[in-house]
Image (tube, rainbow, N blue to C red; front, side):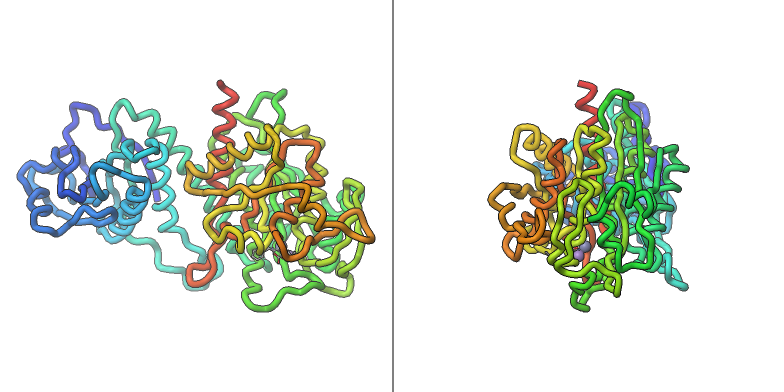
Length: 504
Ligand code: BES
Ligand code: MN
Ligand code: ZN
């Protein structure tokens, strides 16, 4: 699906816009919005409204063909809900209706003449992003491994946003950001959906190398020998039972000034999580191919910011391996030594995400980061706490971390990719006491997502850090099973905000 912006200057009449389908808004009180009124030369639109063929309810649509005096082949009336409150909810419903309607048309292109800057509490960029993401999602297919491909998307292939002269440059920038974001999310979804026999640690490393080549990024992939030399005993203990070699990926997008400290994103890359010797039950175990969605979101975010040429230094770090049971696998009770020197009693080999992340979090100290954010499908307990709506956000509680948390929460809210803050406090650390090592890798049933975050916290004391638990938000189960591309919108928006705040 292809998107563009077109300016409609004062001299160009709405009736003269040449397109397969011109989309205009209608409100619930059956009033035409300005664009629709300008189109309603001979009263055909008013007549359609009067007849009750369209209510104006958000997302309702009506197709009118061959209107006299209108250059567009079709006019699509799109319900926007009540006139006095174009809420973000109603706009999203309208967008969904729009995408459905455009998929049924016989023309190739459409032009949108909608009140994109009128959504309450949102801006033009928000509305454009909404439409682009919904459009791209509607044509997304996960059929790479099907011998007979899913039906190709029907209907409109090209969508133009018509904007005023005053809005033109804002719209253009917003569209570029939205398309780059959709591209990044598509990569994240593709990687997540790809099964573990294809998406191996080596596959993720090759994906990173390809991204680096295509977008001129720095990339380094550390192999087992180098990880041993770095003394990443915790990470390596997770890969013991697997025949696939582990990889440690470092990606660099250095778009900022050389003296600016980088932002570091660390993504959990377990390409399949069987639980190891603490084997998971069989039901839905296939979904543990998604246990690399943190890594995929880092790669997707890099795809986005590289396309945008973001003026910020960003480093991505991905520890990736499989978690398998075998004769050589780590056993419950084994004690391993992390890169930080802290020893860890592995009471449950299924709490492996924190074991690979802790060494990555120690490794990134060398970058003297401005901030570190790790992204991980870390705990089932996070789903119990927050369901599938919000990503769990964990930070310490001091001024610097409160600020980072607020930034991430805001970036999530403004993209609909929301997070909710959870505590990291010393009282929970007690649950991680071990009789035989410095720390245990599990903290028991209560507050499972919090104790997982508290485990990571012990490895992050040299910098400002946030942890995103995306176990509930990275993919959907059931009939609509598939990766969501979250939290690429949150991360991208946060990075964009960082650039804006550097300029101030
Ligand atoms: N990858 C899982 C977390 C997970 C589970 C994500 C279900 C999404 C859905 C993680 O490695 C894991 O197995 N965590 C354990 C931790 C427990 C052993 C303390 C869990 O959540 O059960
Ligand atoms: Mn696990
Ligand atoms: Zn896992």
